[in-house]
Length: 117
Image 1 (cartoon, rainbow, N blue to C red):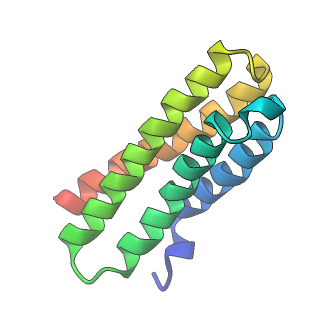
Image 2: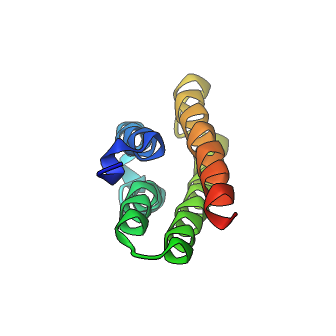
């Protein structure tokens, strides 16, 4: 593997960022500096930490950055649920982001387990 861009989990999390940016564009304008901003930051943090971890020299450091990415995914999950409960998006719109996030979280979990063993 030559680059973090070769990792499936990085690619899927990058797609998630694009999806979250699309999703929050549907939010009420009053949310532009609140929940939508926080969701964008949480989403961007996932592939960013995967990339930074890849660049580290030691496996333990790599695992730490994957763990941080996982934590950002949990933040994003909470924020998505809040957006759904506040009816900022339709169930259909929410579902696409939720499924993609779930896939990324599962991949990160497996990846983290392999790095720690």
